[in-house]
Image (cartoon, rainbow over all chains, first blue to last red; front, side, top):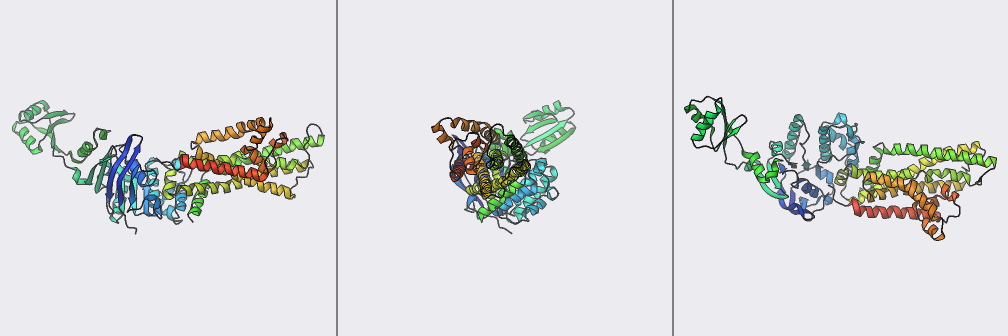
Length: 300
Length: 267
């Protein structure tokens, strides 16, 4: 069993002309857990990962695996498994041959391609040309490439994108299991909701800068509490709540009350003799803080 | 060891898509048609005795040289596509992940394509000699298959085809856009260079320059070609000089391509 090594970014910077795609990124990704690398599209996630993997030359700073840059790893595919967003295969080549090409280049055993196809559930489709694969199957093939050398570190760019619900559940379990074995797992996403059930730790970047780093729960800092309530006589309910000093706004399916507890609003309606048809405490929390951190563009 | 792995991987890349045998098939048809057709025409002309007559002793090699004089475009395409498809399908990402030393990858490709070009040369010669020799024999002309000169010619032709595939690799690295590379190969080999060669043969000084054109160098290396027999006054390099010119073009194009496209950021 390969033991995970930490991924270390030190003052990593990449500029294209005058624009800093990534600026001064310093952080460490520890083994044994799943780390989410989050940020809106264009925040610099992919550029960061490509620098980590030696595909893009940093303008300054370093990105290493326990101190060794990707290009100096003795056996890269057996140390780091990576899958990047772009569909990187020749459509006329079968999945098995696609994997065999890279297994041979990396000097991996002959059995590696079939073992990797087996792991991602593509064993029955290995001799089919990749051009005919669905988006979900391509995503799995990308993962098979990452798993080819049974690596101690996994770096996956948007691995959940394009998977069906069953596939999402499957990849969650797989990533959790790999982290539990002590491997380092870093996955990127532009949607917090996509990975919040998978990750232990989050790194959030926006405009190429680190804006948050910590456990997933540390994101839930918001103290604003909202209540959603509805009644048949919605206007009278709104008047009653407003009269009690709350700020209300109309929703399609009810009234949204800011800074309120569901219990207090329920009592108000009861005292006024209005039958309530719906009453719930809205959880803002994670997604809200995520969007606040990454700014307006986060909602795109 | 690492270099051997790179070549192994490149050989698998080449053989695992349909491109190589589709190109080889078209090449065989094209070369066999030209060689068989011209053998029939010259064989017929020779027996009726009208029009320009090519001495019988020169005819077989001239016919067989269609393997390179018209077939060379196929190894060039194979080499160019081997490089440009990596850019087009973004497969440079997994390629460089599996083998981060980019010079090793490019070197492996160059060696693999030299081998593939040599195989294409053997196949093209089988087509030109197969079709040409049987038609010549039918007209009662000695196909000269037992002559040492013929076998030396075959060896030089195989070398020429190998070098053409390497030139393709260099071109692909210089022009990573697949469409542009294909257009350049076809326009240059089928149109621009034949015109340049004819034009260059007009004056003495331009003929000195013209012999360094890749097609002229290739014909010099092979030692026989339909072009040189059309204008026999053309100056020509020695066979080994022709080979060196082709090798130099391949190496220079590949090295420049390495700096202009191969070592750039992959995104």
